[in-house]
Image (cartoon, rainbow, N blue to C red; front, side):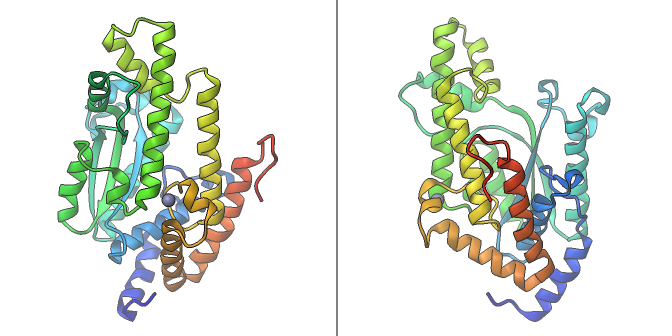
Length: 295
Ligand SMILES: [Zn+2]
């Protein structure tokens, strides 16, 4: 990768403006800086024009579904949520320092694909539910805001705006849809599916916790993808699909190469910290797995 030396110089200065703890996934408190380092890299990638937008999110109690961030009573929040909101505000200050734009939105829709196993009207209503969470976006080009709004309205997938490989975006949509189908089947056996409001609440809040072996199996597979992506492609922020994990020269490996070269160019320190941090993160994430930790 080649970038004008003046730009590289400016990015090196910008790197110093980003706090060490910057990601809502930060594990700084247990000595793992992987997500913070990765966030620094991807914020600078937005600044350099390599990436269109940076994205992070925070889940909130459902009473805050439509409440602006500034009006939230923090005494009602758990420590974890308080931490995430603090990180969100920190990201806003950092964006301003870097001369980038900041936008907070509600999460309006998950990226599901069509399914025949759930009635169409339920899928449509489910897609319109606003999840009690705030997403935030950092970007530089004004036009990106139009696309963020499309994502907000469910007309564009997050991953497509964030430059993730479409094979991996498709994979995540399929997995989420499968979880939704399993959750719907479970609900129909246990409860009355004609009570739509209760059903939709269940489909929104319990998708990943339904006590079914199939759900546990899907969650296990997602965890494997998270760990394998981090191990093989430590410079990307999406979860890679099976094809990208199992084969060489894939869209994810190419993207990883781009961000790896960018990291090396901006800061050899950040570059090696991401590699070391990824190893530490994967070990920590997989250390209690029955098959043993991935090293
Ligand atoms: Zn892929």
